Structures are given as structure tokens and as C-alpha cells.
Length: 353
Image 1: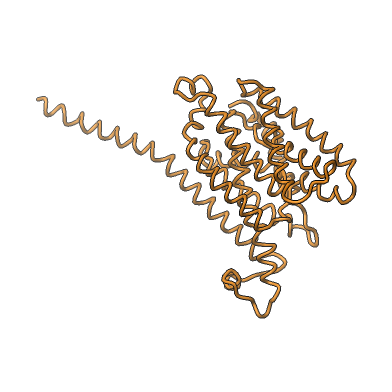
Image 2 (image 1 turned 180 degrees about the horizontal axis):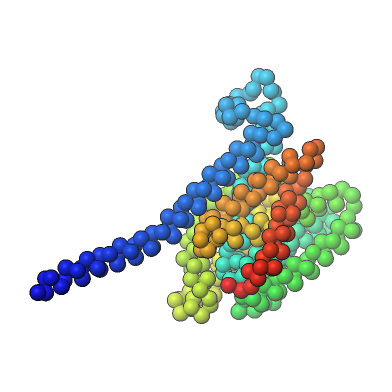
């Protein structure tokens, strides 16, 4: 009698276990599907940015040039590819990954879709420091990037200090206020700048990939190779922090994990700004787009890929959308991000999650 009762019971447990495993496997499968699709889209845009445009390079010539050969019928192809198209595309990918990952960390840790580095003044802190160095201190060269990184870190420290240890919504309000103040400082400095200084300062106000160089790319790539593994190491605490500070503390994730994540995000954003200026709205839009694609779940990998897609795609539009006009990439991302921000506010999705 007992054997006849245990048979259906064991079968029921097996079905339940299978259902639980399938439910746990579904988000993971969707994440890899989203990551694969975004990776394919990024590869296509990268190829379009490098091979198409006003000077078309065939895939065969691309391989030859990378192998060190010259193209007999197009002697300028090597220079155009290696000094303009390819560095712009590579820098766009690296900076986009940094912006997208940083934005998603801010938004998930602070549980607010408005909490991205550009909205909180982190990017503007780097811009203000660099413009001050150009206009007042006459700083040139790579030292400007160092000043930009220091400006972003100091701005984040000041915002964190004024907001207090609780952070959260108060930190967002302090950050938005700081962004407005820093923008006023930049505009004042711009009015006092000489013509040559104003041209250099313009890059630190809008963001551009036109000055992409291989030394800059190497430095940014090395920094990302150090920072992104640290982000991956702390990603479990990021998921717990999304549940709220009380639940996170109950599960053993203190505010120190949140501070560590935010510090990594600040460094990612500061390095990207130092490389190509404060490209508007990339960090802001990457996280929400990736979350929608991933069924409402935060994905830092997806956000980084979306950030790279936005950067490379916007740079292609900035270069070729208007004939005989080469716009800074920040102009295109600003035109794309501003309507997204208005939709976010109008739909009521900008509140605390």
C-alpha cells in the first residue's frame, strides 16, 4: 500500500524540481540571448563604421591593411583606416561599455532610473575641471585627461559627503543640484576663454571621438581590463542591493558594497570622459534599454553592450547623416537622449524603484 502512494509522490517531486530548474534556467537563457543579439548588432555597426561612409573599404582590403600591406590603387586607405575610422570605432566601443556599465550600476544601486553619472554631475565634474585647466591654467595634452579624472572623483566625493551616509534619493537630489551648478561654472569659463581655448574646451562640453588616438585607446583598454573584472566580482551584491537597503542589510550586504560599486562606476565614467569627453545620455539610456530587453532584470553586460551600440551608431550618424558636416557624437546622443528623458518623466517611470 505504501509503495503505491510513494510512486505518485516521487513523480510529483520530480515534476516540481524540473519546473523549478526550468524557471531558474529561463532568465539565464534570456540573458545570453540578449547578450548574443546585442553583440551581433554591435559587430554589424562596428563593421559599418569602419568599412562604409565617404571612403569605402572592402573587407579584403581591411584584412590586408591590418596585416601591414598597402592598397596599390588607394594609397590613402591605410591612413584613413588606421588613423581615423578604426580608432574612432574602437574608442566608441570602449567608452560606450564604460558609460553603459557605469550608468547601470548607478541606477540599480540607487534604485532610481534618473541616477546616472551624467545626470548626477559626475561627467560635468570632469568637464568643469578640464575646462578650468584649459582656460585658467593653460594645461595641454594628456594632463587634461588626468585633470578630468580627478575632477570626476572629487565631484563624486563631494556629492557623497553632502548627501550623507544614507545616500539613495537624497544623493540623487544633491547630484542633480551639483550638475546644475557645474554647468553654470562651465558656461562662465567658456565666456572667458580665448578663441583657441574655446575650441579645445568645446570637446569637454559636448563629447567627441574625433581626437581618438591609439595611445588613448591603449590606456582606456588597460583600465577597463582592471575595472570590469572587479565589477563582475561585485555583481552579486548589486543584485541584492536592488532589493532595498533593509533587505540588503538583512542578507549581509552593507552600504560598503554599495560604496564600492559606486566607486567603480565613478572610475569607469571618469575614464570614459577623459578619453572622449562627457558624451551625453549614453550612461542614462543604456541601463533602461538593456533592462527592457532582459525582461525587466538589470544586466550590466547588456548595459555595456547597449552603451557601445549607442556610441558607435551615433558616431556614424554624426559623421554621415548630414552631408559635408561632421558633428560631435555628443550632439547626436543628446538629441536621442533628451526625448527618452522626457518620456521617462511623462510616463512616471522616473520614480524610485
